[in-house]
Image 1 (cartoon, rainbow, N blue to C red):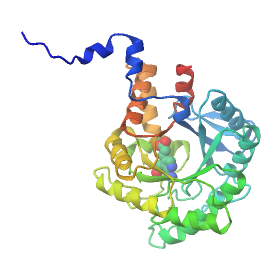
Image 2: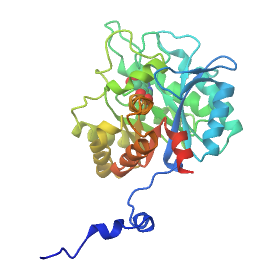
Image 3: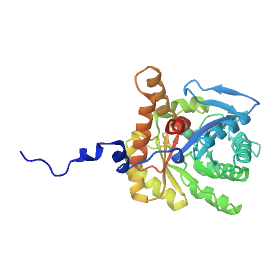
Image 4: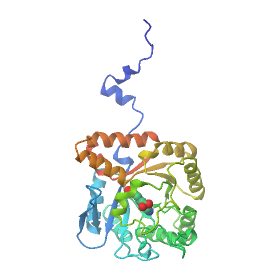
Length: 324
Ligand code: PBG
């Protein structure tokens, strides 16, 4: 009987050997933790669709960011819920807007924590779309760019370390870059939501951010889940406009897209493990159907293995605790 000369099982014999040949690492330094900041003093309200995640007033957001920092989580990503919404989403660029206030407070308390701000209008518009509407109800791309640029400048002036535009308007990376250059804010990296799919997995987030579109959907600006070549084109355009990191979102149904964006651009890639992916894990674990720790670590390792340098995940603090 002929035996194969190469036996891969030889490399799986002991934990030490498995660690020596491990190809992918996952640690808190790869993770960014998204948070939802609200106005008001001393509020911490659980978000029903996302067990373990709360709406945080500024003081609590500072505290939560501090916990993440102490655990070694690299950064936080801030989403804001304004006190009131309007047609244009003016809360987004208000100097005293909730994300600007939170950014200042978090950077003052935890200067080494990397603070990324979400650049979008959907949390701030009364109709819930990611931009301003024309009279026919369609989002006006170019008018929206101006408002996004204003938002970006306000966030950087408040101390944001990086910007993450999530609106999916055409040309927004270039518009942000130009507006920042004009203010001499040339050093802020842009983490562009380059391949953002029109996904059912954003459901819990829209409840958390109170940002479900009042009419219609986002298929006019977000990507068709069936397309991957288009993701590569989106990524290339963002790179050409001055994006520093390219994001794929959601993560788990799009591992092939993460890999293709990585291989075609060789730029740093971020993957957003979104609210619905988080909620699924939590629900399965709560029902006793999955071992939460093992399942989450496996899923996030898979996202890293696919090619993501950075993983944005609501599991960040748990992962950091588990890996301690
Ligand atoms: C919109 C935005 C969305 C998310 C972040 N920013 C979803 C949407 O298009 O409604 C989703 C994040 C998540 O599900 O965790 N600008």
